[in-house]
Image 1 (cartoon, helix red, strand yellow):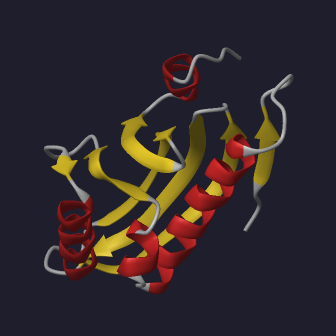
Image 2 (cartoon, rainbow, N blue to C red):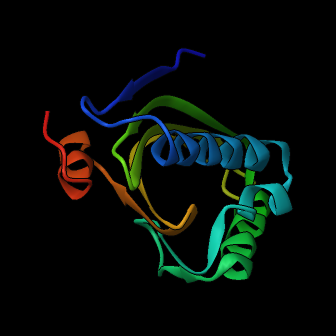
Length: 142
C-alpha cells in the first residue's frame, strides 16, 4: 500500500496536523470495523456526502451507512493513497475495491474526499471524482 502525505506550504503545525491524524485514524478504524473509533472525530451535526446516495446527517447516520455498505459488499478494501493537509480541511485520495455480495459485480473506484473541520471535529465530508475539484473545494490548487 503506497501512501503519499503532503501538507499545504505555509501552514504551521498544530490543529491542521491533528485534523490529518484524526482523519487517518478514522479511516483505519473503519477498515477494522471499529465504527465507534471511526466516528469519534465527527461533530454531532456532521454531514457525510458521498456521490452515490443522499448525505448522512450525524454520526449515527454515518455509522448506519457504513454498516449497510459492509453488509452489501464482500472483500471491500479501502486504501488511503494520498493525504493533503489544507488547514481546516483534509483531502484524501482513497481507492475502494470490492465485490457486490448479491450481484458479484466488482468495483474499483477512486475518490477524493474533503473532510472539513471545526474545533477539532469533522463537520462535513464530500466526495469528488477529480483531484482538482477536491483541491479547489479546500481552497487549494494544483
